[in-house]
Structure formats: C-alpha cells, structure tokens
Image 1 (cartoon, one colour):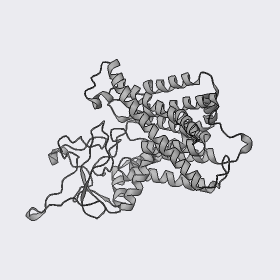
Image 2: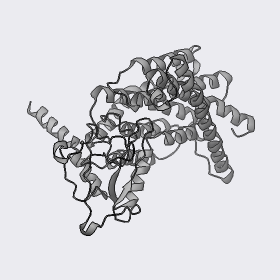
Image 3: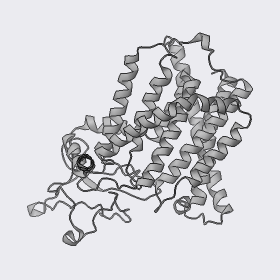
Image 4: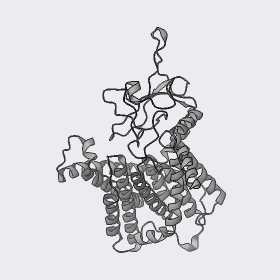
Length: 429
C-alpha cells in the first residue's frame, strides 16, 4: 500500500504542468511578464480560463482568448511592441496550428535561446508527417527495402496502439498557463502516452535491431544514434508544452514494451505480406476494421483521422510489397551476401540518391493531392453530407475514415510499388 502511494505521488509529480513550465524557462522560453505560476480563476479574471486539455480557443476575428493574463501597458501609455525571435524582447508567436480544429495560440513570449528553439523544433518534426514522407522513402529507395518494410510495420503498430491508448486513458494536455504552448497542431488530442515519444523510441531502436548484423558497422554508433534521437524527440515535446514528463516517459517505455512483444513477429508478418496469395485482401480488410472498430471518441479530435492515415499507409506499403514480390521487383539481397558493406559515397551515388528522393517525394505529394481531391467529394456524395464546408465535412467519420485510409493507402502503394517501377523504367533503380 505504501509503495502504491509513493508511485501515485511520483506520477502526480511527473504530471505536474508546473514542471513543464520550469523546463521551458530553463531552456529560455518565457511567458508574459507578471504571469502567475497557476492559471487565474475565470471568476477572478473576468475571462474564460484555459480549456481542460490546455488548448486555446479558436480565434475568430482575432480574439485574445488563450487563457493567459495580458501585460498592462507601462505608465504614460507606453506599450511593448513585438520584436524579432530570439532578441530577448517580448514577441508574439503563432505556433503551427491544425486547420481542421481552428485552434490558434496567441501568446506573448520570449525565446532567450534560439539554438534550443530550433533544435527542439527539429526534434518535434521527427514525429511529424514531413519527416515520415522523407525518411521512409529514403530508406526504401536508397538504403534497404527489406529494412524499410519492417520499419514501417513496427511504426504502424506502435503508432496505432499509442493513438488507441490515448483515447482510452483520456488524460488532458498540460494546462496553459503555466505552460507556454509553442505548438497547437495536435492540441485536440489527449496526452497520455506521447506518441511522438513512442515513435522517437521505436524507430531508432528498430533501426538498430534490423540493421545490426545485416549491415557492417560498429554497434556503438547505432546505440548513440538511438539514444540521441530518442532524447531529442522526448525533450522537444516537453519544450513545446505539449506533454508532461510522465507522458514522454510512459511513451518511451510503452514503445519498448511493444517492441519486446511484437518484434519477434515482424519477420512472419513481412513474409506473409510478400508470399501469401490473398495477403492484399486480408491486409486491407484488417487495417480498415482496426480503423473503424478499435475505439470511439467522446469528442472529435485529430486522433481518429491520424489513426486511419497510419493504417492506410501501412496497408498500401504491404500491398505494394506483395506486388513487388510477385513480379520479381526490388528483390532482397540473398543471405549469403550478408552482412552488407556500406558503399563508398561518390558524387554519382549521392546524386542518384537525391534525384530518386526528389522525384519520388514529389510524386507521393501529387498522389496525396489528387486522391484528396477525389475522395472527399466522393465520400460526401455517397453519405449525403454537405461539401460546402470542407472542414466540417472532414470531421465526420463517414468522410474522415475513407478519405484518410484511401488517400494514404495510395501514397503507401506508390511508395512501395509505383514509384520504384518508374525508377526502373527511367534507369534510376
């Protein structure tokens, strides 16, 4: 009983939003002057307090409703004017927001350490779509398709379980104030566990597990990369004000647990995707069922659409891998050639790798744009949903799930099959 009480106190300590605010101040992020350590009560301030999950109300018409007290003008009517980032003066920042939620943050803050600001922005991007659409194609087209397929399998299951767990536990984001929100893109989602921390732990660890012994390199290099990658992503989520310390610790441990349980089955799943005759039908049905029936939301958030997006991408990659295998394309190296020796980097090798990445990613983005233009109006028409307000229509499950699943399923299929076929045709393979 005493042990449980100590664990509960430790959990409460690690979940305290004030610890997040303290870390932000340590890293040079400061909120408005005179800000209290805890949020003001609505009845005392005369303004609505911050939302339960720490998100900021949408600003229609330029409202100021972010829950932060405003610094009063100095005597004589003098006012603080926003200055440039990182010069030590108060400046108004507009974090990257999600167009679907309409959330925006309008907080006056100071960035005292520009290096950490850009470093942790890089860290948080390691868990965003832009990184995935560059990293996975680069691995598959330029490094090792065998390893890339398995990395995506691990990523899909880790992210899927993480998103589902968030919507089961339903813990709010750190409250703002005292936390300064440097990002609001995923603010409508719940907080526990941090899926950024999960992917930031699972991807580098899986990369080391898959590559060591297959590729010839010192294990210490892989471990250093994994530790730095994981640490950067986890600390970035606290710095951004999006997660408590407990969220990122739980996310990392959860990802390790999933890898321990799930990693032994990765080879079996990949072999099934490649060789089983009816694998595409089973894969598509399973991933679609997981997206529809796995969990329900009490209120709409980006979580359901992101889950469908992840499952659709995984299904598309698996189906593309199956067609590659059946047609004898992108064949894996034979076991007697292992371990693989990293090639010497030459101008020709580097140029072809960059050219493949540029051409391929442009085609993936075009695929996403075209499929989005087709699937949203089609889903609206099929389910008799008004399409004049795209934002409202995309929040409906009947539109959101087929749009995300089909669009990113085609992106995954293009990544694994259509784009490599093009490379083969133009002599870039």
